Image (cartoon, rainbow, N blue to C red; front, side, top):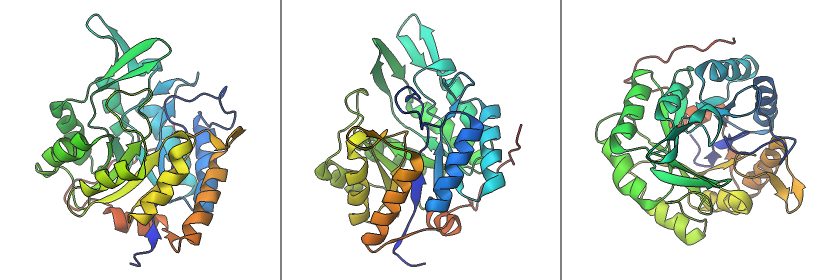
Length: 306
């Protein structure tokens, strides 16, 4: 395959932003599927999906994921990647005497039971600070292993979401050494969340270069830049041989003071990818680049609308 093919990911929803912040944010299954199809037609080859409850709160409910996945698959063959991070509200949060608030690991596990080809795997333990709350997200080494094991049993490839060098030095290699992923590992380097998430890094070309230098052998990678870092991080990723991601999950604005839609963000990114001498990969080409389907794992379950 030509080395100029780039996997373009759309992240349409996320688990934090609200329609009050941007009315274009899709939160319900039909809205998300419509947005994803428009982005697919504009050049996206993968979608990073977060689910929301009917009242727009974050969830990893597998039934809601199956509905979203099924509606998307009725329209196109884009790679479907379901989140196991969830979000910082709704049924994802539990109150604990020890920590105050914690993101429920049991709820996170539900994200892998909707038949997706890929699921996010965040090997991060950190504290998120929002609206006067401190919320612990505990992904210990054993929990990281558990997520990887359960994905592998279902024929799901992890998208490794990494936020700082230790994830690449310690956490990801520990799971790869167990044979719970197949080459090439697909790593999403997330930068720019440092204002609200302890243990994460801001975006800069120097920090991104450091993270790329630490990638496991034979990795494919993309970069998620938050807020105003989204576009420069994507261009920086291309220059370093990586893939790209945009969407309202990471950035609500097209330019300062102007809210964006997902398709606007994808259309601009596709233009720039082509101006840089690259070409968007089709979903089939993206699967070949990423290593889908997994060769040594069981076939993943089919999802259904419902």
